[in-house]
Each structure stands twice: as C-alpha cells, then as structure tokens.
Amino acid sequence: QVQLVESGGGLVQPGGSLRLSCAASGSVFSFYVMGWYRQAPGKQRELVATVTSGSITNVAASVKGRFTIARDNAKNTVSLQMNSLKPEDTAVYYCNARNPYSGFYNYWGQGTQVTVSS
Image 1: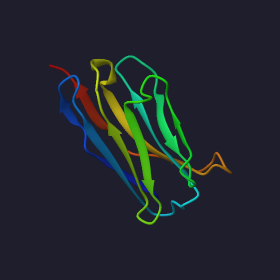
Image 2: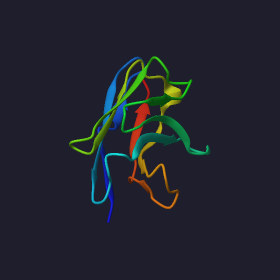
Image 3: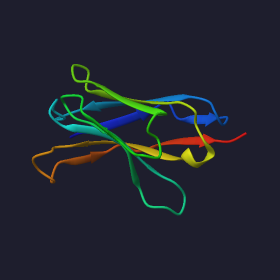
C-alpha cells in the first residue's frame, strides 16, 4: 500500500516562506513522477509543480519564480519551497505520485493547509 505523508503547512504572512515535504512509503518507485497540487475553497484542484525521476520540472505559471520543487530519489521524498507567498496561494496542498507509464497507479496524500494572511 502506498502512503504519502505531507508536512510543513501552516499560517504565514504575505511575503513569507514555507517549505512542504512529502514522504512516500510502499511501492513508489524512483521512476514515478512526483508533484504538488492545490485546491482552494470553491475551486478545482490545480497543478502547482511536478518533477520527474530525472529532475525535469513543470511549474505552474502562477508560482514560477517563487516556488521550487525538488526530490530525493534515495529517500522517496519530494519538497516544495514556497517563497514570496501571496494570499491567493492559500489552499490545501496535496502531494502526488504517479506512474508515468500507467494511469492506474496514481496516489495522493491527505493534504496540508497553507494559509497566507496578515
């Protein structure tokens, strides 16, 4: 059974920083694409950033230049460094791991709340 456990969410003032971490356990292989998605109240879940096993990243335009995704294949972890946070970044952030060769294997964490407010 695959488990993804996020940590690092919280309340931060505009312009501040947070770092999210996700630890994967179970049958999550190093070739999986790892990523972060977010869902704000009343909105659909959206991609924030993904990273392949070869560290190729895909970052949403809304966070490019402010957020950085990174992974450690040896530890099966993925992180999201979030800088210059804005109120519109407020959302529940979800860790994701998916097999790029099969849509059947797609896993989600339980989510962690990020609130940007003064």
